[in-house]
Length: 431
Image (cartoon, rainbow, N blue to C red; front, side, top):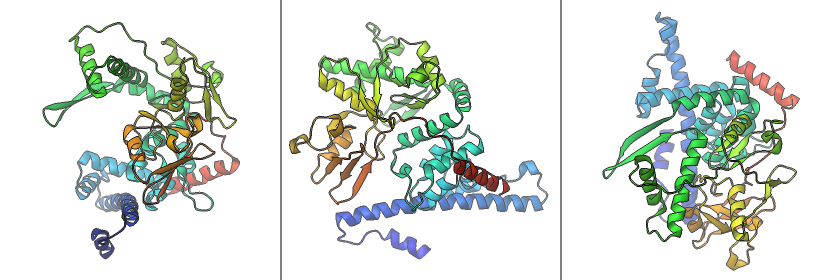
């Protein structure tokens, strides 16, 4: 074991090609994921051994397991609080999320990705958590990896939220209602005499605040303001909160909530989507809309529920098309693993190479990914199913799946899935 680690630490051999260096990075990432899975397994076994030893020594039941989290923290060089969280995650992975754990052990899923799934399913019953674990993380019948391994963190979070809302909307709504009590403002130091000001807000308030600041930045840019977008947003926040200057007329802020007509009229409870945030329960969306000036824009989907067109009242067609692409791609960069907001509407196949300015050949990218794509040796092509395949200069290909901006409710559990859930639950409880 240690000899293998030593060989890895030697690094790639001198003269390795660009492709070989990318392969090294990929292999080492897989080793990290596997190591995190084995660490979780070791932490659970450590707790079992400690509890057994303490029980034999006559330690009261309520104190069994004391000190394990601190041992984990010391071994992993983190704070005791972090050690407790890591131990808690490890226990959940082993007992309630076997498919997620299997992905980690196979080197395809990181500890942080697993943490997101555990967090978004925390309010559910063990049965429902097992269902989500199976649907998102189970290997295919031929051993193919599930789609979650190429999702960005925001996409992964949204996928888990959607399923959680579908399986037990009441629990998610109750959790959201309690979360409102946690709203707060925090301040922590940053380098160079700067500070980080953080605000935890309900989603409709947080998205509205950000949209207002973003609108102010766009207006300033249009007026020729030389400040950067971030500087204008920060200055506007200070002005409006402190009253340092008199704000102008209250701007009209648009927060996009996508939901089916049936959900809007109380006839269905399919999860809604808040652009810039993700899935929310339909009941929450209806309540939020009661307090807002509502403008309904029709969205068109194909039979599978994928967004294919949007009604636009914009006078300039390019603006309407750009808005459609941003909405279709969920406001998030299409590059695998990138959760940055869309800043550029980009041709998948370059316009100079004959690429059309159409929905099928456009994608939303952040500034960094858009610039990277223009580097020498990068190529991209759209797929007939809405996917985008990018080829890097080393010849490695990465496929971004079709955006899941709006999809129908997951089908009800089949008899086989129901039986599997019962078997998994029985096995978990027995263990």
